[in-house]
Length: 64
Image 1 (cartoon, rainbow, N blue to C red):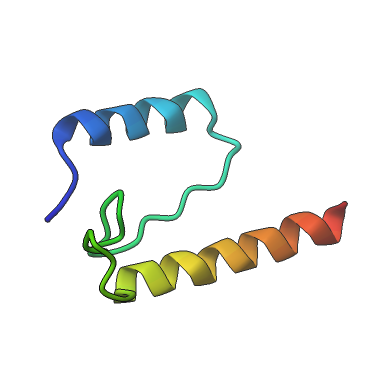
Image 2: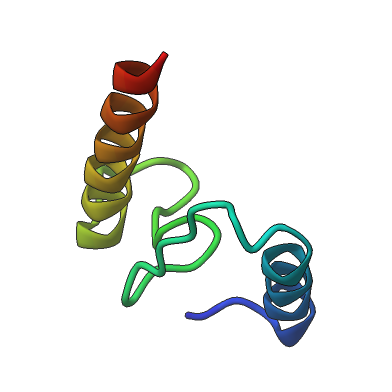
């Protein structure tokens, strides 16, 4: 299930206010990356989010 229009609108507004920031859309993901509560394990979307986060952190800390 995707995010509500309200959350998507907030995301668009943030991206407009900070266009220099990195944004990665995760296909099939929502604000929880498809993970259930209680946690039942990772999803493909969550795994991709972790991978993208690791790439971002490596890039940022290489510059520091």
